[in-house]
Image (cartoon, rainbow, N blue to C red):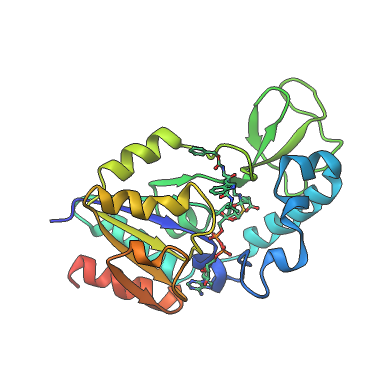
Length: 231
Ligand code: BJW
């Protein structure tokens, strides 16, 4: 039996909940230069712009609802006899709101604020502003607790351990353009895991997967979960 299932998710799983992806034709990078809103240098240049970008997305994420793909993964965690871990690149909380408990946010969370001066973290208000001060140290150095290009993703050791123990590694709704997540499938396959891609279209790393299911996440994910559970 496949005991340990490790699932990597990306923006595509939340697309049918109304949240934008990054690299699709109408995605977030079509209207915002990633250098301006997803790098520490962009934040240093224009913190107001970056806060506006994340304030809008925080409000959209709070209004969004989990879709059938998030719900199917929560069902998998409940009924699978082994362990299920979701490593998400997403900063929304739709996995948790669908009922998944084992979720690592490797690129951070819109729900958290971070002080760049003292590393204190706290629950983000709906709107953040460059003039906000840190509740711990008082510095006006508050930022969204998200991981920008050039920064180290969260949960590195926990993720390495999970990937090493994976019997099945499934990747859902991610383009495979961003590292280190883009390297996980090849790593797991070399270690002997069965690798599965579920996406709208073949990702950049499609050759690293032994099994492929292409279509909207709300359709292909529940069907895959049914097969894994033997339903
Ligand atoms: C659907 C669908 C539907 C649509 N159903 N599917 C050169 C070589 C190698 C690496 C580097 C390099 N130069 C620089 C790097 C490193 C860099 C990197 O990867 N750059 C690339 C551009 C090359 N990476 C980093 O800097 C990372 N840090 C790092 O590497 O630290 C060093 C380190 C060393 C050793 C170990 C560990 C680390 C940090 C990366 C941070 C990325 N941050 C962002 C923003 C987060 C906050 C926010 O949300 O704003 O993360 S960028 C953005 O991209 C976001 C996403 O999480 C990430 C991935 O995007 P995702 O989720 O794949 O979305 P899309 O839009 O790309 O794809 C959506 C997919 O869904 C598509 O395929 C669609 O077809 C599909 N889809 N509708 C199913 N209904």
